Image (tube, rainbow, N blue to C red; front, side, top):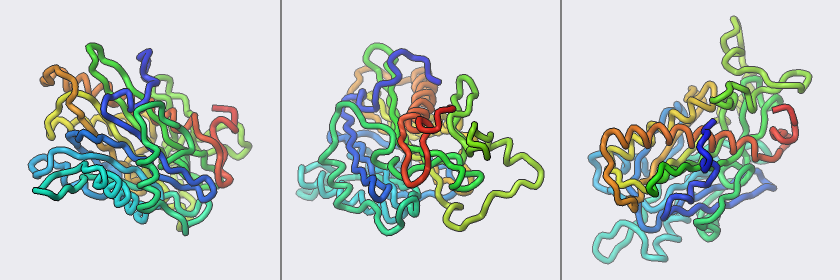
Amino acid sequence: MCTMSNAARAITHVQGIEVGHYTDLEHATGCTVVLCRGGAVGGVDIRGSAPGTRETDLLRPGNLVEHIHAIVLSGGSAYGLDAASGVMRYLEERGIGFRMGDIVVPIVPAAILYDLGLVTSKVRPGPQEGYRACEAASAGLVAEGSVGAGTGATVGKALGMSRAVKGGLGTASADLGDGLIVGAIAAVNAAGSVVDPETGRIIAGPRQEDNRGYHNTVELMAQPGFRRPQAAAEARVNTTLGVIATNAPLTKEQANKLAERGQDGLALAIRPCHTMGDGDAVFSLATGTWEGTVDRALLTRLGAVAAQVMSLAILRAVTQATGLGGVPSVQELGYA
């Protein structure tokens, strides 16, 4: 776990970053928007084999658009990508976006996780919900746990949903000194166990038969002849989504490298991650308000801390969650 004294701060510790949630507890779904009204250089790294995304090609080095204006993390599987349309409308109304003459086009990449069926598969975030998340956005404290994109998230599903634990959304940040900040936010809906990387202790995983502890997912999978329960709906209910933000002035190439290092945070805290059933995606945002210069040594330092704050955001997502849809939380189980 990240040991920096200020690491429990939110991604909104980065100047120019706002976060807003739309939360539907009744139907166990929601969405989260990370706004950067002033624009930010963006990057992305996708390592899961079942991703659902929008506008990620724009973030690749060599493509025209340099700055983006929001990132949407949403439940609802592929249907949830519609939430980004509401975010675009919100930004367009305020004249925020990529300008071509008198036309403004907000650049809003998005990624989704699969929460369908925890309560219902018929309700999922759309344009109205994305717009409402923007209306709720602020640069202050960020609600964590079973909120926003983490509302219907679950973890530890190697033995099926009947042994799963509630996932959620978490955030963290670190101050590297001289005003240089790195922050992270994560919506954690992983197939694997969530582990404290500092101690190796399993924070959440498949519940044991007597409900007195957790199985180790990797050890389960390593057993000869292991077969996961194959209920059709359960095979696709995974994905961890994250955003790394910094006020450093990064190039597009550097922003993509930072997103790549954010994925290291997933590997630190989720075991296993990046599976065939996960759509793990990490975005990055660089607002560029810090006045220093980013050389190779500093980018290495930023990347190392990015992995740490992402792993802490993942731990907070699970430890701050509350039970929903019959899936208990770490807090309710009481043996984490």
